[in-house]
Amino acid sequence: MSGETSARAVWRILIVDDSPALRSFIKRAMEISGIDTSRCRQAGNGAEALAQLEQEPADLILTDVNMPVLDGEGFLKRLRQLPAHAGTPVIVVSTDATHRRVEDLLALGAKGYITKPFAPERLRAELERVLGAEPAGGG
Amino acid sequence: MLLDLSEPRLAGCAGEAVERAIAEMFFEGLIEPAALNAGAPDGGRAARAVVRGTLTGMVDVHWDARAEASLASNFLGAADAGELTDEARQTVLCELANICCGSLLSRLDPGGRFDIETPRLVAEPLGGPWLRFVLECGVVCLAARLEEAR
Image 1: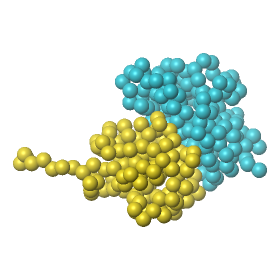
Image 2 (image 1 turned 90 degrees about the vertical axis):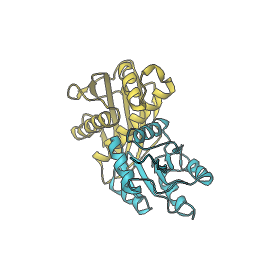
Image 3 (image 1 turned 135 degrees about the horizontal axis):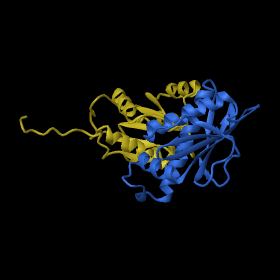
Image 4 (image 1 turned 120 degrees about the vertical axis):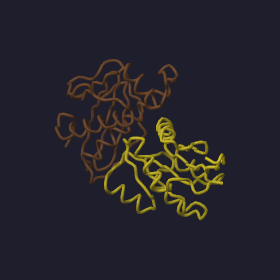
Protein backbone atom coordinates (compact mmCIF):
# COMPACT_ATOMS: atom_id res chain seq x y z
CA MET A 1 0.00 0.00 0.00
CA SER A 2 1.47 3.35 -0.95
CA GLY A 3 -0.22 5.24 1.86
CA GLU A 4 -2.24 7.27 -0.58
CA THR A 5 -5.89 7.67 0.18
CA SER A 6 -8.31 7.84 -2.68
CA ALA A 7 -11.42 9.87 -2.11
CA ARG A 8 -14.31 7.56 -2.87
CA ALA A 9 -17.28 9.37 -4.28
CA VAL A 10 -20.52 8.66 -2.46
CA TRP A 11 -23.78 7.93 -4.24
CA ARG A 12 -26.57 10.44 -3.71
CA ILE A 13 -29.50 8.06 -3.32
CA LEU A 14 -33.06 9.26 -2.83
CA ILE A 15 -35.43 6.75 -1.18
CA VAL A 16 -39.10 7.43 -1.91
CA ASP A 17 -41.69 5.43 0.08
CA ASP A 18 -44.66 6.33 2.28
CA SER A 19 -43.51 3.84 4.92
CA PRO A 20 -40.87 5.29 7.28
CA ALA A 21 -40.10 1.73 8.39
CA LEU A 22 -39.36 0.62 4.86
CA ARG A 23 -37.20 3.65 4.17
CA SER A 24 -35.17 2.77 7.28
CA PHE A 25 -34.90 -0.84 6.15
CA ILE A 26 -33.60 0.15 2.72
CA LYS A 27 -31.04 2.52 4.21
CA ARG A 28 -29.88 -0.13 6.65
CA ALA A 29 -29.77 -2.79 3.91
CA MET A 30 -27.44 -0.54 1.94
CA GLU A 31 -25.23 0.03 4.98
CA ILE A 32 -25.04 -3.71 5.67
CA SER A 33 -23.96 -4.15 2.07
CA GLY A 34 -21.12 -1.69 2.55
CA ILE A 35 -22.72 1.23 0.72
CA ASP A 36 -21.97 4.67 2.15
CA THR A 37 -25.34 6.27 2.93
CA SER A 38 -24.07 9.61 4.19
CA ARG A 39 -25.62 11.34 1.18
CA CYS A 40 -28.81 9.29 1.23
CA ARG A 41 -32.11 11.23 1.50
CA GLN A 42 -35.70 10.17 2.02
CA ALA A 43 -39.11 11.32 0.80
CA GLY A 44 -42.61 10.13 1.73
CA ASN A 45 -44.14 10.37 -1.75
CA GLY A 46 -43.43 11.47 -5.29
CA ALA A 47 -44.27 15.12 -4.65
CA GLU A 48 -41.83 15.35 -1.74
CA ALA A 49 -39.22 13.64 -3.88
CA LEU A 50 -39.60 16.18 -6.68
CA ALA A 51 -39.24 19.01 -4.15
CA GLN A 52 -36.05 17.47 -2.78
CA LEU A 53 -34.61 16.97 -6.25
CA GLU A 54 -35.06 20.68 -6.91
CA GLN A 55 -32.65 21.30 -4.03
CA GLU A 56 -30.11 18.63 -4.97
CA PRO A 57 -30.04 16.08 -7.78
CA ALA A 58 -29.68 12.37 -7.10
CA ASP A 59 -27.45 9.73 -8.64
CA LEU A 60 -30.17 7.12 -8.14
CA ILE A 61 -33.79 7.05 -7.03
CA LEU A 62 -35.44 4.10 -5.29
CA THR A 63 -39.21 4.48 -5.40
CA ASP A 64 -42.29 2.67 -4.20
CA VAL A 65 -45.41 2.51 -6.38
CA ASN A 66 -48.41 2.87 -4.04
CA MET A 67 -48.00 6.23 -2.32
CA PRO A 68 -50.42 9.04 -1.49
CA VAL A 69 -50.27 12.52 -3.08
CA LEU A 70 -48.12 11.38 -6.04
CA ASP A 71 -47.63 7.67 -6.65
CA GLY A 72 -44.71 5.92 -8.31
CA GLU A 73 -46.11 6.02 -11.84
CA GLY A 74 -47.01 9.70 -11.57
CA PHE A 75 -43.59 10.45 -10.13
CA LEU A 76 -41.80 8.71 -13.00
CA LYS A 77 -43.89 10.56 -15.59
CA ARG A 78 -43.14 13.93 -13.96
CA LEU A 79 -39.47 13.10 -13.59
CA ARG A 80 -39.10 12.39 -17.30
CA GLN A 81 -40.48 15.84 -18.05
CA LEU A 82 -37.72 17.58 -16.09
CA PRO A 83 -34.54 17.96 -18.18
CA ALA A 84 -32.31 18.15 -15.08
CA HIS A 85 -33.53 14.80 -13.77
CA ALA A 86 -34.87 12.91 -16.76
CA GLY A 87 -31.70 10.84 -16.99
CA THR A 88 -31.54 9.91 -13.30
CA PRO A 89 -31.79 6.14 -13.00
CA VAL A 90 -34.83 4.90 -11.07
CA ILE A 91 -35.25 1.50 -9.44
CA VAL A 92 -38.77 0.59 -8.37
CA VAL A 93 -39.13 -1.19 -5.01
CA SER A 94 -42.65 -2.58 -4.69
CA THR A 95 -44.75 -5.44 -3.38
CA ASP A 96 -46.47 -5.49 -6.75
CA ALA A 97 -44.97 -8.17 -8.99
CA THR A 98 -47.86 -8.37 -11.44
CA HIS A 99 -46.83 -8.46 -15.09
CA ARG A 100 -48.72 -5.33 -16.07
CA ARG A 101 -47.30 -3.17 -13.30
CA VAL A 102 -43.73 -4.23 -13.99
CA GLU A 103 -44.16 -3.65 -17.73
CA ASP A 104 -45.79 -0.25 -17.16
CA LEU A 105 -43.01 1.01 -14.93
CA LEU A 106 -40.21 -0.25 -17.12
CA ALA A 107 -41.97 1.39 -20.08
CA LEU A 108 -41.96 4.66 -18.09
CA GLY A 109 -38.19 4.43 -17.89
CA ALA A 110 -37.44 2.57 -14.66
CA LYS A 111 -34.04 0.89 -14.94
CA GLY A 112 -34.75 -1.81 -12.40
CA TYR A 113 -37.52 -3.42 -10.37
CA ILE A 114 -37.11 -5.04 -6.96
CA THR A 115 -40.09 -6.92 -5.56
CA LYS A 116 -40.73 -6.92 -1.81
CA PRO A 117 -39.89 -8.99 0.09
CA PHE A 118 -36.23 -8.83 -0.82
CA ALA A 119 -33.01 -9.79 0.90
CA PRO A 120 -30.43 -7.00 1.37
CA GLU A 121 -28.08 -8.74 -1.09
CA ARG A 122 -30.70 -8.36 -3.83
CA LEU A 123 -30.76 -4.60 -3.29
CA ARG A 124 -26.98 -4.37 -3.51
CA ALA A 125 -26.89 -6.43 -6.69
CA GLU A 126 -29.50 -4.23 -8.34
CA LEU A 127 -27.74 -1.03 -7.30
CA GLU A 128 -24.47 -2.27 -8.75
CA ARG A 129 -26.17 -3.43 -11.94
CA VAL A 130 -27.78 -0.05 -12.51
CA LEU A 131 -25.01 2.22 -11.27
CA GLY A 132 -21.89 0.13 -11.67
CA ALA A 133 -19.67 -1.12 -8.84
CA GLU A 134 -18.39 2.30 -7.78
CA PRO A 135 -20.01 5.74 -7.79
CA ALA A 136 -18.89 7.64 -10.88
CA GLY A 137 -19.25 11.10 -9.40
CA GLY A 138 -21.51 12.74 -6.94
CA GLY A 139 -19.80 16.06 -6.49
CA MET B 1 -67.01 -14.86 -5.73
CA LEU B 2 -65.81 -14.19 -2.17
CA LEU B 3 -62.47 -15.72 -1.23
CA ASP B 4 -61.05 -16.33 2.20
CA LEU B 5 -58.35 -18.65 3.49
CA SER B 6 -60.65 -21.65 3.31
CA GLU B 7 -59.85 -21.47 -0.42
CA PRO B 8 -56.70 -23.67 -0.75
CA ARG B 9 -55.04 -21.64 -3.48
CA LEU B 10 -55.41 -18.42 -1.53
CA ALA B 11 -54.10 -20.11 1.61
CA GLY B 12 -51.14 -21.47 -0.32
CA CYS B 13 -50.24 -18.06 -1.77
CA ALA B 14 -50.65 -16.45 1.65
CA GLY B 15 -48.43 -19.04 3.29
CA GLU B 16 -45.65 -18.55 0.75
CA ALA B 17 -45.93 -14.76 0.94
CA VAL B 18 -45.69 -14.58 4.72
CA GLU B 19 -42.95 -17.16 5.06
CA ARG B 20 -40.77 -15.43 2.50
CA ALA B 21 -41.38 -11.96 3.97
CA ILE B 22 -40.52 -13.10 7.48
CA ALA B 23 -37.35 -14.81 6.27
CA GLU B 24 -35.97 -12.17 3.89
CA MET B 25 -36.84 -8.91 5.63
CA PHE B 26 -37.48 -9.91 9.26
CA PHE B 27 -34.75 -12.55 9.47
CA GLU B 28 -36.83 -15.17 11.27
CA GLY B 29 -38.11 -18.61 10.29
CA LEU B 30 -41.07 -20.81 11.06
CA ILE B 31 -40.56 -23.53 13.67
CA GLU B 32 -43.59 -25.49 12.47
CA PRO B 33 -45.70 -25.53 9.29
CA ALA B 34 -48.31 -22.79 8.95
CA ALA B 35 -51.74 -23.94 10.13
CA LEU B 36 -55.29 -22.76 9.49
CA ASN B 37 -57.26 -21.65 12.56
CA ALA B 38 -60.94 -20.81 12.64
CA GLY B 39 -60.84 -18.05 15.24
CA ALA B 40 -59.18 -14.64 15.39
CA PRO B 41 -55.94 -14.40 17.39
CA ASP B 42 -56.00 -12.99 20.95
CA GLY B 43 -54.15 -9.99 22.26
CA GLY B 44 -51.34 -8.42 20.23
CA ARG B 45 -52.36 -6.11 17.43
CA ALA B 46 -53.31 -6.17 13.76
CA ALA B 47 -52.87 -4.03 10.66
CA ARG B 48 -55.09 -4.06 7.61
CA ALA B 49 -54.16 -3.57 3.96
CA VAL B 50 -57.15 -2.63 1.79
CA VAL B 51 -56.75 -3.50 -1.85
CA ARG B 52 -58.62 -2.48 -5.00
CA GLY B 53 -58.18 -3.79 -8.50
CA THR B 54 -58.99 -6.99 -10.33
CA LEU B 55 -59.34 -8.42 -6.81
CA THR B 56 -60.81 -6.18 -4.11
CA GLY B 57 -60.84 -6.66 -0.38
CA MET B 58 -58.54 -6.68 2.61
CA VAL B 59 -55.71 -8.54 4.24
CA ASP B 60 -55.13 -8.42 8.00
CA VAL B 61 -51.82 -9.30 9.63
CA HIS B 62 -51.64 -9.84 13.38
CA TRP B 63 -48.65 -10.36 15.67
CA ASP B 64 -48.43 -11.11 19.35
CA ALA B 65 -46.35 -9.00 21.74
CA ARG B 66 -43.32 -11.31 21.62
CA ALA B 67 -43.27 -11.37 17.84
CA GLU B 68 -43.70 -7.60 17.74
CA ALA B 69 -40.64 -6.98 19.88
CA SER B 70 -38.42 -9.28 17.84
CA LEU B 71 -39.67 -8.59 14.33
CA ALA B 72 -39.78 -4.82 14.74
CA SER B 73 -36.24 -4.86 16.14
CA ASN B 74 -34.99 -7.07 13.33
CA PHE B 75 -36.60 -4.97 10.64
CA LEU B 76 -35.30 -1.67 11.97
CA GLY B 77 -31.94 -2.96 13.12
CA ALA B 78 -32.49 -2.11 16.79
CA ALA B 79 -30.30 -3.93 19.29
CA ASP B 80 -33.10 -3.90 21.83
CA ALA B 81 -36.86 -3.67 21.33
CA GLY B 82 -36.92 -1.14 24.17
CA GLU B 83 -35.20 1.34 21.84
CA LEU B 84 -38.27 1.43 19.60
CA THR B 85 -41.13 3.84 20.05
CA ASP B 86 -44.65 2.49 19.82
CA GLU B 87 -45.09 4.47 16.61
CA ALA B 88 -42.05 2.75 15.10
CA ARG B 89 -43.44 -0.68 15.99
CA GLN B 90 -46.78 0.23 14.41
CA THR B 91 -45.17 1.34 11.17
CA VAL B 92 -43.32 -1.97 10.97
CA LEU B 93 -46.53 -3.95 11.43
CA CYS B 94 -48.19 -1.85 8.72
CA GLU B 95 -45.28 -2.52 6.39
CA LEU B 96 -45.50 -6.26 7.14
CA ALA B 97 -49.19 -6.12 6.17
CA ASN B 98 -48.29 -4.22 3.00
CA ILE B 99 -45.60 -6.70 1.99
CA CYS B 100 -47.74 -9.77 2.73
CA CYS B 101 -50.76 -8.35 0.90
CA GLY B 102 -48.83 -7.38 -2.21
CA SER B 103 -46.85 -10.58 -2.31
CA LEU B 104 -49.99 -12.68 -1.84
CA LEU B 105 -51.88 -10.89 -4.63
CA SER B 106 -48.93 -11.02 -7.01
CA ARG B 107 -48.84 -14.80 -6.58
CA LEU B 108 -52.61 -15.27 -6.71
CA ASP B 109 -53.30 -13.04 -9.71
CA PRO B 110 -50.03 -12.28 -11.55
CA GLY B 111 -51.90 -11.10 -14.64
CA GLY B 112 -54.13 -8.76 -12.67
CA ARG B 113 -53.74 -5.27 -11.31
CA PHE B 114 -54.09 -3.88 -7.79
CA ASP B 115 -53.46 -0.84 -5.65
CA ILE B 116 -52.97 -1.12 -1.89
CA GLU B 117 -54.05 1.71 0.38
CA THR B 118 -51.64 2.71 3.14
CA PRO B 119 -52.16 0.01 5.80
CA ARG B 120 -53.58 1.02 9.18
CA LEU B 121 -53.93 -0.63 12.57
CA VAL B 122 -57.37 -2.12 13.21
CA ALA B 123 -59.02 -2.69 16.57
CA GLU B 124 -61.29 -5.46 15.23
CA PRO B 125 -59.51 -7.83 12.87
CA LEU B 126 -61.31 -10.03 10.40
CA GLY B 127 -63.29 -12.94 11.81
CA GLY B 128 -61.31 -15.72 10.16
CA PRO B 129 -60.18 -18.22 9.13
CA TRP B 130 -56.63 -17.25 9.96
CA LEU B 131 -53.30 -18.75 8.93
CA ARG B 132 -51.06 -19.08 11.96
CA PHE B 133 -47.27 -18.86 11.64
CA VAL B 134 -45.33 -19.93 14.71
CA LEU B 135 -41.86 -18.42 14.95
CA GLU B 136 -39.31 -18.93 17.67
CA CYS B 137 -39.95 -15.32 18.76
CA GLY B 138 -43.77 -15.46 18.72
CA VAL B 139 -46.80 -15.86 16.47
CA VAL B 140 -47.88 -14.02 13.31
CA CYS B 141 -51.32 -14.58 11.76
CA LEU B 142 -52.91 -13.56 8.49
CA ALA B 143 -56.54 -13.41 7.29
CA ALA B 144 -57.92 -12.29 3.93
CA ARG B 145 -61.23 -11.40 2.30
CA LEU B 146 -61.09 -10.91 -1.46
CA GLU B 147 -63.56 -10.84 -4.32
CA GLU B 148 -63.30 -10.30 -8.04
CA ALA B 149 -64.15 -6.77 -9.07
CA ARG B 150 -67.34 -6.48 -11.09
